[in-house]
Each structure stands twice: as C-alpha cells, then as structure tokens.
Amino acid sequence: MLTAFRKQTAAGLRVLLVLTVLTGILYPAGIWLVSRVPGLYANAEAVDTTLVGVDREGDQWFHTRPSAATLPASGGSNKSEVDSDYTAVVAERRAAVARREGVAEDQVPQDAVTASASGLDPHISPAYAELQVPRVAKATGLPEQRVRDLVAEHTSGTVVNVTALNRALEAAE
Image (cartoon, rainbow, N blue to C red; front, side):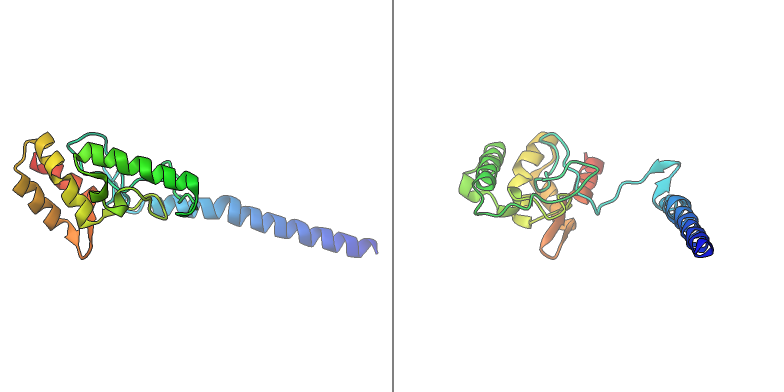
C-alpha cells in the first residue's frame, strides 16, 4: 500500500511540475514572443491599429460608438432595450449627441447611442459619419467637401473606420 501511495504521489508531482512549466513559463514566454513580432512594434514603440476604436476628445475628431468598456478591457453591458437603466442611458446619449452635432434627437443614428458587443468597435455607419461632418469641418478649418471625401475614402461597404478616418484627418490638417 505504501508503494502505491509513493507511485501516486510521484505521478502527481510530475504532473504538477510539467503543468507548472507549461502554463507558468512556456505559455507566458510564447505570448510575450508573439507580441514582439515585427509589425506590432516599430522602433520599440507599439504601432496602433485600425482594428480597435479609440474615441478621441475634441470637436476636430470623428467619434466612435459609445463604449461599455474601459480600456484595456473590452465587453458589452449585457443590458437590453427593455432595461429601464439602459433606456435612460441611450436617451441621455441621444440628447448629448444631438446637442453636440446641433441636430434634432430623431436625426441621431442608432449606432451613435448604442455600444458594440466588444465596446471597442472602430466602425460607425455612414449616417453617423455624415452627421459629424459639419462639426469636424468647422473645428479643423477644412472645407466640408474635403471632410466628406475623407469619409468616403474610409467607407467600406456599410461602415466607416473611425480610427483610420481620424488618422487621415490628422494628416490632412
């Protein structure tokens, strides 16, 4: 009986050691190495991506969808349109966007007031981008047509990539 106990203890310790090395050393080291793949870093500085929406402060930028997440985390709120708290938040956002853009609340597109599932979506609808054109043109001093052209250049199908659009806007100023 004592030999069976020793064998089981030894087997358990071997499994513990192997899993510790795999999950405590090799996996984190592998993730760290992948994060250093060329293209993700340039001159030892992280290269930002157009795959994540980051809302910039100020009237000179196009704004993304609202986020239920706080960077670096992501995630939705899991609230539905029948939740009174969620309805109040959406109404508050709609009023704020309408005020900022100088339009009636019924002109504010749905994606301007609802968060995406991840909370980090870089895309907005062309309608929401068009709503923002006059404000952005005024704040940047660019002609409205030039801003509309930039929106068109960064529209793919039914979405506008705000991160790429804001980069182009920054280069155009």
